[in-house]
Length: 291
Image 1 (cartoon, rainbow, N blue to C red):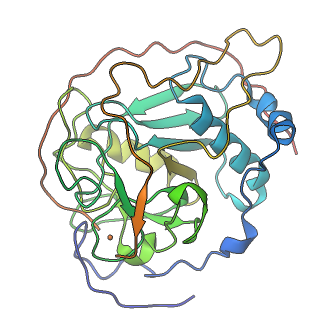
Image 2 (cartoon, rainbow, N blue to C red):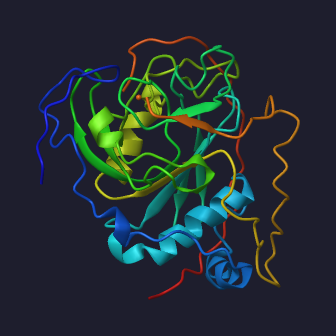
């Protein structure tokens, strides 16, 4: 394991955070296959996840297939997280998926100020380099909890190298000090624009501690703005038919293709607040794929 001292920018100013570079073997992780038949064979084993169709179907299927194919390399398999950075920050766009019950827990989440230089609530730029203050797209494993500038923060290890499809590139997340932390500028109970971080996925302080306690040290997270492949949908006979990947009229402005540069940690303040709306959870048992 390599120990590297790096300059602290943005989200934290503490040096005692563990390694500054991930020691994960990224080549061991595989992406979802392009063939729809191959993906359908996996996805249909998880048909009862997200019974209320809260998560964009294509992103949910990306996470399901990646989770299934890499399950042996994912230490904690009770949950995974999907983040849709194509949505405006005033909307719920961070979802915790319970693999036992299928239920989904929605939250607001901040993006980096470098991803939204006009401060209009929509992220359009993404990066994987220290100092950019940009959010990073791709698959992650959660890391350890620590107390830095923000108490009870959680480290993240990126699994997507530069050059990955759909602008995914987050392999420098640990080195950049991209972490999940609480932030006063994120409020699940408000519907106006949320504040911006320095690249970290920051959550409402009322939700972040419980979230970190559930998913630290080895849970899969997936941040994207569009699916890797067209969704295959649920299998025949499933009670809940999936909706098309129509973001709906309240999603905000259409997001351009991600722009990823070679130049991205988090602020302790930000602008914007937002209102809560009730989320109905449908109760259904989960039929999980057994290995």
